[in-house]
Image 1 (cartoon, rainbow, N blue to C red):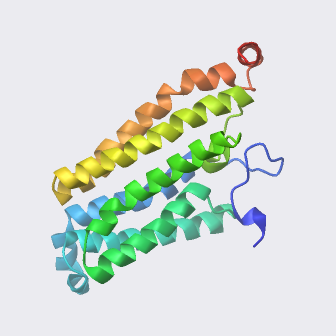
Image 2 (image 1 turned 60 degrees about the vertical axis):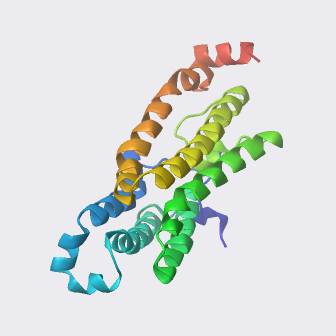
Length: 222
């Protein structure tokens, strides 16, 4: 397959910047569909009776989540001519565990999906560091450029954060109701991720290659 199908490393001259709002909509859209379908499952069945054949709200939400994920990936390809790495990998896991959820009629599979995804990315990032590679820029298609030390530190932080999210998901789905778990995915995990992201901005500014003073400070810190 042509390598250009996938998002390029931000340092690649052929890399194209993506509108952040479009990127956000494509990546968060399926999650919002999942939340809405689970919380309004009965309403959906009233207006679309065939959905009753799928099962309860969580199963309807899972099915629509899979559809929305496929639509988002398709839209990304049609609009951007790229397949974002992180949503693509997440999408594959969604399809596999979503299918198991519907086939076996067992909601456990969709609940452990975030654990699998976050563990996967955490291991990839930390494993990359172990072999001397900072993969964060490639995974996230970052719009900023950092020096080597900045990438190492940011990758380490994100790797640990992904593993934290994996553990947190296990605690939530095993300790609380399905509705609480679904709500936490939207109103818990997303805010935590945004807070963590903004908390990294001082590091990004310090090691950014787009700011000469910051670049000098970062190089002096090596």
